[in-house]
Image 1 (cartoon, rainbow, N blue to C red):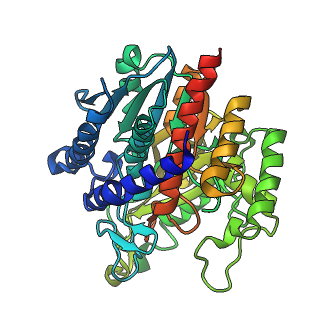
Image 2 (cartoon, rainbow, N blue to C red):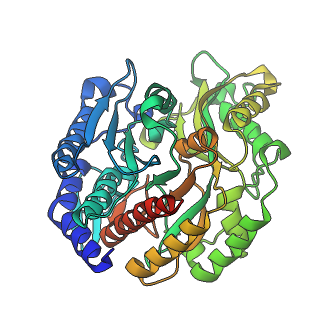
Length: 474
């Protein structure tokens, strides 16, 4: 492979076509079904599917025999399925998603979730980095191989539309398409993060997630607080007490031992190496307010906290009026949205059922307490890298980033990885991405670092090529 030629081809395709496509994609408010119950009627998901499938379909003319289907199972989000013929009997699966997180507040002046803005090397807007670029980056890699006449295995690209809701539709598509997918020996996922933009980062583990809506109701309707306070327990106070069953309010530590696992020694060593590379960037990449500090000064503990330990976030609240409308009323109920990250090797479904029982049992004062489970995605712990893949990512990182590859667990969740890990235990995994410092996926001012997107595409091309070459050697 001529790596300089590869770099020119991929970079040119990104500049001429991919970035303009991502600009248009960012304009589409195709929020994941959990955040847009009327997604079918709104039609935004179909707009995003059409934008991507139109571009991809046009590019497939350069890939002989390639096909594209938009698969639609009744009552479920659509899925883009692309097959690119190759040599040999092996299959490579390349995965991404096109649904987005909701808007979130706090965008800087001139920026917005559906307002694409290019500033220097960054493309701002919701979904470009998480994970709209995946289909473009995957096809750019395959097109680059064909441009040089370099053989590769059969490739399957799957782009789902439900990832930000927990990928609850994806198992049905995987089962439906199983005969067409085959038995992949390599899985490539571009939906992960990077510790910096200076080198290739491989994801070694992903936390699982469970969560849902916790509601505490004490009255049928609101009443005068001067009349009821001291007689009727506050729903907020009861909710706070219930959360203390799960989380230490002083330290944030999750209390039940049932939600922990033993951290593999290899992952502890990788956490130490990560801190050697990143230093204080482990925490100072976050937009702390002045005077704020992380939960501990121990960098290794911070890495392990965000990759292998359970952590709780309250991501939404209902039952509370806005401040300008908050009268002297003892409110009838309080609801919060809970997001509980669980260790990579802990069952998300079992964790969810445990939390539901923990929160609902023996409600204080006999209050009406319900926990409506919404997510139960398990995490993923990467298998040992094959020597060929370890060598290839090291070489590709040097070729395109000019620095060694690095390895790090991620605190987020990609349910598809756990699913594929169970179905194809012999497969190798290349999990990487562009979500680096300050890229702020899910939050305000999300951006895609364009040079990293280009380089990740180049790395994928090299890995797919070496995957075939390794198999051809026997």
